[in-house]
Length: 162
Image (tube, helix red, strand yellow):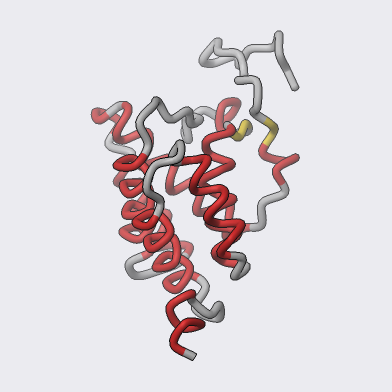
C-alpha cells in the first residue's frame, strides 16, 4: 500500500483497499473490461468528459459488436443496486489508472467469476459490490457480457437448460 503517497497529477492518496493494476494480475480481457467500465464511470461522474465515446471505440476495437453496450448494462445494473458512492480511478490519468480500487476489484471479480463459471463466487462479489442489495440484474448483465466477449464459455442459462 502507498498510504502516504499521492498521485502526481491528481494529488489524491490511494484508498485503504487499493492495489496496483500490475499486482491485480488481470488478463487482457479483464483489463479491457476495466478500462471500458472506467470510461462509463467517468462519464457518470464527469459528464462533460464524454468518455463514453472512448468506451465505445475501445470496446469495438477489442471485442467488436455490442460489447460496449453489455459493459454499460453491467455498470448501470450495479449503479441501480448500489446505494453509496462508487470509487473508481480516472481512466485518462496514467497514475490513477495504475491503481485498482476495492469497488473496481469487486466489479471485475464478479466478471472473472462469471467467466470462470463460478456462480457462487460471482454472487459473493456482486453482493459485496451492491452492498447487500439485489444482485440479479448485475449477475444477468455479467452473464450477457461473458456470452458476448467470451462465447466459448457456457452461460448459467445454458447450464440450467442442459
